Image 1 (cartoon, rainbow, N blue to C red):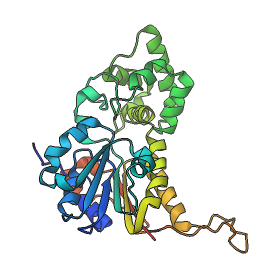
Image 2 (tube, rainbow, N blue to C red):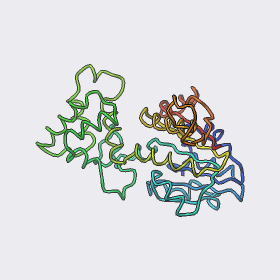
Image 3 (cartoon, one colour):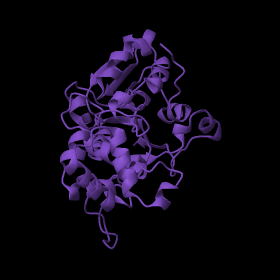
Length: 311
């Protein structure tokens, strides 16, 4: 097994978690176990690391990747959007730290059979959990044009969403869109020449949108944030890495609400809601990758880390 993979913002996450050797921590997005390895390495025999992933392949590889630290690791197959149930069913609360890396894991991107990449031909899949039924093929070949337009606009922030959705529907009326590169061809054909000259790949935003829809990602992030804070111990840290503006906005707003507490209208003379701040923001602005990390790992370019501490 090759362990040259360097997880995004690794040192910043370790600093953010402020790991105690006897603490209980959670990595809600195990992936290649890059973050998990370094957390587990810092735990003593009384410490515990809980690792969640919706991709069974990540859990299957964990034993080899976490190696000598497996005696302090608990593996859970599940969606972090179901965090409340996953922890409550196991009687877990008062955690000392939680980490969530919201990006698509490198193995999923690199495995062309999974259909996440617009650079390689593959079936239209895009499922993070391959036991789920909804695939990108269903979205692309069966969803109504208006729903396609909505997700491309809302989840991909794609300004040519109406044209792309219409082109998809026209093409599938002739024959099904069978693969990722078929879809790329349709997207390219729907965009004006000036858009094709942009530095960013023309299919990037559309693939992001379809992937988010297939995996219900934004809803899962919102549910996770609402469940994580109440299940932290006082002084426990929550670290969340996001990779696009939709996720980062969700994380920023949720943590700001937990940090604010009171939700009464500002013109009310006294608080009547009784809500108090539950966290403090460790850093007001998101933490981003250093120039050295960007040179080593270009995938970190859009990563933003936000950290909050339970009061």
